[in-house]
Length: 129
Image 1 (tube, rainbow, N blue to C red):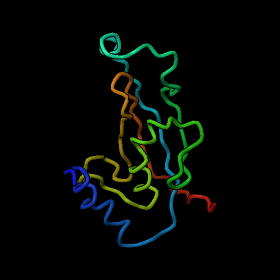
Image 2 (tube, rainbow, N blue to C red):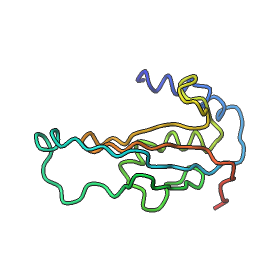
Image 3 (cartoon, rainbow, N blue to C red):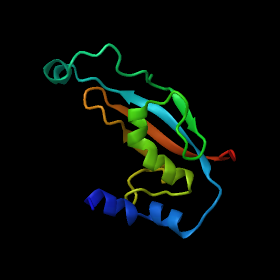
């Protein structure tokens, strides 16, 4: 098991989920920053016609742990475990990493065009579906 997996499993956020079940919350995902590394793109990437549709300031609402419509599949792979934890009431990732314990700042896994997302637990319960 990787060290990050151990840290996540032992974190207060994950332990809170394990201890009790509560109504899932909605989670807001806000695109905070989009970077682009042209030097890396020109040196390593094969030309792409279309890479990313994200716009700075764009907001997505997750109904519990479910991926929002039109959210990038690759970005979802990066943020989904944090969304699931927040939706189930988890907080305080990595023992105080974020000022708001019910949030996380996560980047997608695109090394050429990383997008930074702010994830925040909403007060609103997720819809039953």
